[in-house]
Amino acid sequence: MTDVKVGAGEREYFNGKIRKVETESSVLVSSSKYLNHQELRHLVSQEMLRRNGADMPNTAFIPEVAQILMMLEDFPRIIALFEEEKARLPQFKKWCDTRSLSDFKKDEVKDCAPGTLGAALYDFMVNSGYELDIFYREIQVVNDLTFYLRQTALTHDIEHIVTGFGPNHGGEIALLVGNLHAKARYFHPELAAFFNRVPSYLRAKTIMKDMLHYAEGYALNLEAEYVGATQARNWKYPIMLADWRAMVDWQISDIQEELGITPVPPEGLWADTNNLVEDAEHANDDVATAVAAE
Image (cartoon, one colour):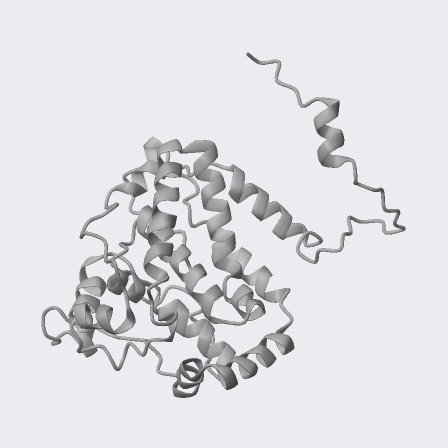
């Protein structure tokens, strides 16, 4: 059946209240600063609709979209929200004031006892093929905002370790959605929206692309969203606020108990799921298909 049409009745029901707005502008203009940004329009549509081929991994153009979204922020308002939330939330104030940066190096953690966060970090840095320092590397920490950007980039894979959500397609989705829920429940909605801006783009483009091109990946996506949200609703607070340096010698099981990280998924869950969301000729590449860059 190829003659599938949307009828006039449906168009009237959904579109009937659309009204034409006249403008003297010679270029596209709308009430959305995001829609008005030509490069952002192009990248969002491309990244939601394309396939993950050998020439362009799933992670392509995350830096560009993140940079544009940051350029469009009202930073005086964001900084004011930081101050308001620090006055309301003692844990957030402590995190901001301490500025304990998780820029771990291999030599710092090479002698940590088995089962500790430090030992897991050493194993990750030596054997995983990934890097801890993946984003905002050039940012200098000079205030709460720059600390937030630098610290959350450094701790993405630490969060993988302590939640049990591995660095694979299912684990990335679970961790991403867990963080969305935790921040939305803890912070003022406006500040939570800022924190969740880039992750929400990653979630949207991933679920759309999976649904269009990778049906098995799409089914996994929905399962992982549920698992991640379920765990995050038990967290004591958003785990971005944990002081990982203070916990580097803790057993991971003790960290999980302290922060309310439960239920922890079985080891190896979703281990081979990257292959579900890549074209066949790309499935065995070493390119990371992680969707989260917080």
